[in-house]
Structures are given as C-alpha cells and as structure tokens.
Length: 288
Image (cartoon, rainbow, N blue to C red):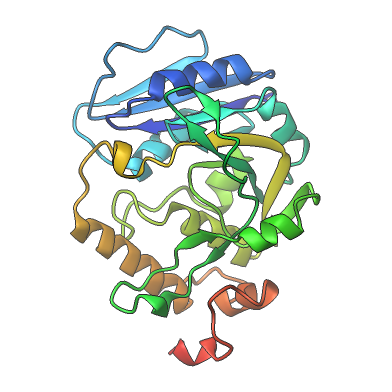
C-alpha cells in the first residue's frame, strides 16, 4: 500500500457532486482515488470519466453510513478521507493532511463557507477551527450531543496550526485507513439509523478508546463547505422520526458510557476541554 489517499464522497441527489469531484481532481497533488457513492440515483448530466474515479451505484438508497462503509471496503489507499458532495479544497490539501496525521488521529482541515454558485470560498465568513458540544438540556425534548462552532476558541488559537479539538462537523475528515477499519470498526449501521451522528461515533471512539487518539485540526489545509440551509435544503427526504431516533440512540449510548471498549468515560473528555460554552458547572448531576 502506497501513501495514496482514498477520498469517499457519499451522494444522494446532490446538485454539486460533479463540481466537487472536479475540484478534488484538480487540487490533489499526490496519489488519490475518488470513490463516489451514488445512493439511489444517477447524476444528470453524468459524471466525467476521471482515471482515478470509482463509482458505487445503489439502485435503492441505503444511506450515508452504509455508503461510507461500502466505499471504505474497496479503498486501496493508506489514508481515508470523507467529504460531502458540495466542497471546494485548497491546492495540495491531500499532501498537507498526510504530513501531519498520526495513526490514531482524526484530522480536520480548517473549514470555510462555500459560495457554490460561483464555486469559491466565501471571504465574508470566518473560518471554523474549533467546535464544542451543545449543552443537551438546552433542548430537553430532543436530547443529543450536537457539535457547534466554538468561535472564541477558533479566534484565540488561530495561529496554533496543529491543534486538538473536542469535535467536528462530518463534512470532511481524514485518517489512516487502518484506524477506520481496525480500531473504529467502520461506521455502525444499527442504532444510529442511516445518517445520524457520524462525527460523534468516530470521534468518541478515537478519543475515548484505549489507543489514546485525538481529533486534530490542521489549519495548514482548508476546505469550503456549502451550508445548504433553506436555499438548497437537504436535497433528499429524511423523516423527522429517523433523525430523532438516531440522535436519541447516540445520546444514550455515549452520555451513559455504554461503549464497553472505552478507556475513558465521556466526563474525561468534557473535563479535558472545560469550560464548554453553555454548560453548567453541575453538568454531572444530569448523568444517571
């Protein structure tokens, strides 16, 4: 196995998949393969025939988690990278990420906002270099461990170019393939439903497991991600009940320390980055 990077792009009814694949092909400077998972659809117009592009087509949608696992199973790279199908990248992003990636890390590039219509990085938005977990009981009827931008930490630590973080958005991550397969065991396709809590699962397993792993921000590399919002929507339908079930499972599993392989409880991670925005000092009173 060489130092190839296998880049997984799960997609379902994505408007900007072709641009994302073209951008990756033009910006990567080392050996790469791109594995696009077409979950229940064919892009129109069809994707261009890049020599390093592999497609997996599902006639019936099976969801993002199954798609990532299927792509990772055939990936031939030493490194795995996953990105959403609406992302733009810095030139040479792959080589920069490889240069600072321990075998027990998940590495996240600096995140900007994407102006997708003009296919450029938005300069009117600050980059996101840090995230924290939103206090779950701020929404007691929808408990979950949701990541939120931590802008104060981003600004205070913007010059620390390789920096540890609490959590991340699932729109882009990078790691050794062996870490994904042998330590994380891929993504669970039960409990979380088809889509929810991807960064929570792989992040907590990396940070709380016996391998002393970490989530690291590499600010030498960047990507720009589209916040679809009301302008673009999800681009496909996912029921509210599935979202609630997936979040509820993730919250119960990690908040109550149900992972048998953990070396640390969740409280260890919370204390490591204390204080967290919006969290009360008596947060442990909510653990039962």
